[in-house]
Structures are given as structure tokens and as C-alpha cells.
Amino acid sequence: LTVNKTVNVTTIGNNTLVKFTIIVNNTSLVNATGVVLSDVVPNGFVIVSAEGGVINNQKVTWNIGTLTSGQNVTYVIVARSNATGNWTNVANVTSKLNDTVVSDNVTVEVVPVIFDVNKTANVTVVGNNTLVKFTINVKNTASVNATIVIVKDLLPNGFKFVNATSGYQQNGQTISWAPFNLTSGANVTYWIVARSNATGKWKNTVNVTSKENNTVTIDNATVDVVDVILP
Image (cartoon, rainbow, N blue to C red; front, top):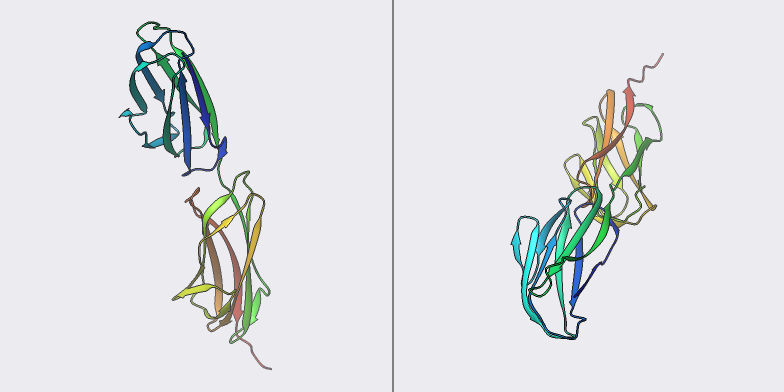
């Protein structure tokens, strides 16, 4: 018996589906009986499906039974990554005629998706009733693509929203854009124009998340709105 284990990707972000394929082949001249295939999915993954297999925690077992000479069978496990690291998935096959374990494995690297978020304002000190332009730049610094990226900007109470990059959605003082994908090394820029309407030091904060990383990445810009005193 031989076993061949492959995976559709080798480097991914977190919260990503992976497809493991296992092929068991009877290369002998006689039929193999009592064939059993087992696959131990590493702790960095959650099993989603394994058609025809019996799932017990992280282990999937197929009781193949008889495999005639030259016959092969294929099984698939779909799993979702849930922790970063290098994770090795091992498949083992045995038979009644040969209880020596035949193994094959694949390794998947789950890497963190990290954003470089930069928030700036075109001015830092203004008078009241003054337009201010906030610029947001988000860069995917990871070696994998980021999906379902969400950018949300919370305007402080000292400002009134005026306009923003097209496609924005406004909910009170929160401005956001539709989820999007950001390839490795790519960046995207948004802007918001708001009018100062109260004096004070006002901090404008932007939050960025993605499917692969739900930890909020934050940056902010502070604008001091001061009274204009005439002599």
C-alpha cells in the first residue's frame, strides 16, 4: 500500500479553509483486506468536513475494507485554520495483511495577517467651523492576502461629517466602507472631510479588521480646535 497526502495551499492566513487530499493505492499483486486510513488533523485547524470518515476530535478514520490489486481511493478533509504556526498533517494506512504503518504528511504554514494603518489630518490646530481632511492608509504587510477587510472610522463629537471617499456608509459618527480584499503588499487609501463644531482636542480613530485577523488594528489623529480671538 502507498499513501499520498497533498494540500491545496501551503501558506495561508488564519480563519481560512484548506483542502487536504489523501490517495491510498494498492500497488501489490494481491488484494489488501482490512484497510484502514487515519488522518490526524493538527491542533491549528478545526475539521469542517470529511466525507465518509468518522471524526473523533482531531482524528478522522476511514474503514476502507478491501482494496483490490491496483485499486486506489481518494478522500478529502476540509479544515479551517484557527492558530498561526507550522502545522503538519499526517495520514496513516494499515491493512490486515500488513500492519506496518504507511504514512505521508504535508505541512501548512498559517501566518498572521498584519496591517500597517496610518491616519493623518491635513491640519493639527484649527478654529471652529473649519473643514479638516483626514486621510487613512491601510497596507497589508503579510505574505498572504487579506479578505473581508473592514475599515471603520469614528469621528469625534467635535466634528460634523461632510464627505468621504466614494462608497462610504455613515452611521452616526461612524464612517465605514464595504468589505474588500487586500492582496499581500497592497495598500488602499480613504479620506474623510469633516467640519469642526466644538473647541477642544479631538481624536479621530480608525479601526481595521479582516477575516484572517479580527484583532482591531488602530491608528488615530488628533486635531486641536481652538477659539479664534480677535484683537
